[in-house]
Length: 424
Ligand code: GLC
Ligand code: MG
Figure 1 (cartoon, helix red, strand yellow):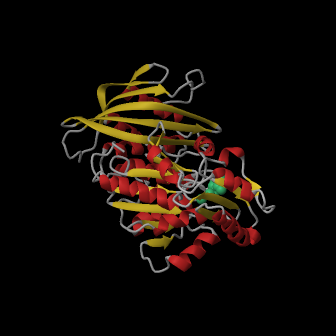
Figure 2: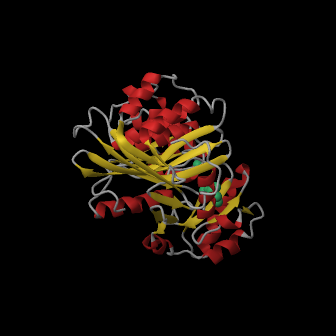
Figure 3: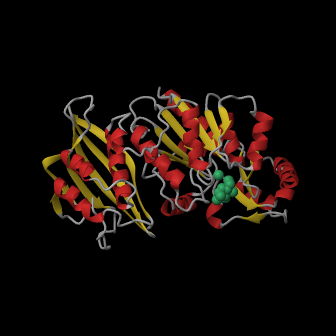
């Protein structure tokens, strides 16, 4: 992980289903609140790690369905596959660690003798993970018998039960906890151990995450029975692990606040846009602007000429905005055009979020900020790459930023679509 030159201020290692992602929240509000908090305050000096039971196939599917951020590191298939960055470069060193006393063929042979086990989809069967459904009532007894069988055959496996229905068989050295321990060791060798690490989960395969020393942990309010039971038996007295009172991503935000790991107020929860400068930095500026834009179109902010005038004053007079279609407009004219779309998305599904907001200081008072901006319009989701040039009057940016230049380009293959509602 070369993006950060020194230790991450915070590393969040989060499970996805029912932890980062709330499948009972069709609006994805808590996820969007977390996203805004992360991009405004943490992205530039912290690390986001997703740790999921899903295979790469199902993980990619979830990313299409939900407004998820791009993590720095992705751990998939219950800690058996670790990849880095956008292009998901696999960690081959980790795979090698997993081959010890593991033979997939023996696992499939032995498990086929258990009629209580029903195989998961083909995509979920991975080189170091074999997965089944099993009824809750039968789980304990099957796990015990199975572990005896596999031990007799010379294997050293780990059997994990999650979500009251999934049974995973992995090499003993695998699992979400071991994968995290492996990462921490790697960072330590590089002299970049994160200052704080927060593990977040809801089900059985997350339990291991909470047994890594020095790591803070949050079990979200909606955590599964099997995880709460594990906690009561194994980690009850550890003050670094809490059971949140909020669901999913809201529980993660709650834990950041409880453990004092950094800012814990999502920019989505701040109603006064002008006041939101607790932590002025380029990331915060970008998040704040696109949130205003979403709320403006929802008519969730006041239709204020004064506010638009303020925004306009923050645009460099000759500064231009290059629309993804290639159309060029003065930034100030773009702000004027916002008058015409106030409330046009009221009562409609419309969300805007930004991902991977990263800035480079290119002069004493100038920053080049790059990020991906997404708009969800009803069912249609559309993204573009954005580059923004920001400047300020003074180095401490106490008076805020001036927008000098904005350039957007469509993400692959989207140029042909109808984007008449795309304003800025
Ligand atoms: C994901 C995987 C599944 C696994 C479960 C629990 O749902 O798709 O195969 O059993 O996570 O780890
Ligand atoms: Mg989960």
